[in-house]
Length: 201
Image (cartoon, rainbow, N blue to C red; front, side, top):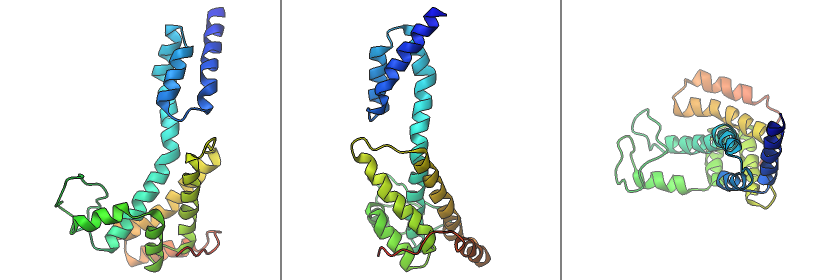
């Protein structure tokens, strides 16, 4: 029992500075320095570290999907997809890609900032403006994580997920060729979302 207590204290002591480190690598190095007992280190590497990695990635996966959806809808509307397949990533050295009509334009859109893409969707009425307001607001929240001592909260995580789910309905309609009835239904549902109208373009 005493040995377990000592191990627990060492483990907790190692995790305390994790609030100030920026990467899992730094956290692991800090834990390695403090967890001097081999059993403690094995518990960290086999159980704790994977859970931390999963937790950190879960905060960003919804935002990554939001960016992918926005980019895909712009590309789809511009006629870059030669087939029903949605392509959002290609090899850096590729000059031609099966399924793409214009690799140069593809790369141009990929490099385009998030705001211009949002503006494109708004101007072409591809997504309801009250739905796009949340991803745009979240993009500013995402940018703040680069500032010192900024952290993502559980509320942030919930909002990223909400933004993805709202946008996914339009992505399905626009990129996966849902019928006009489905698009009309989505537009009707989005009108009930309590987000104010916004103007960024």
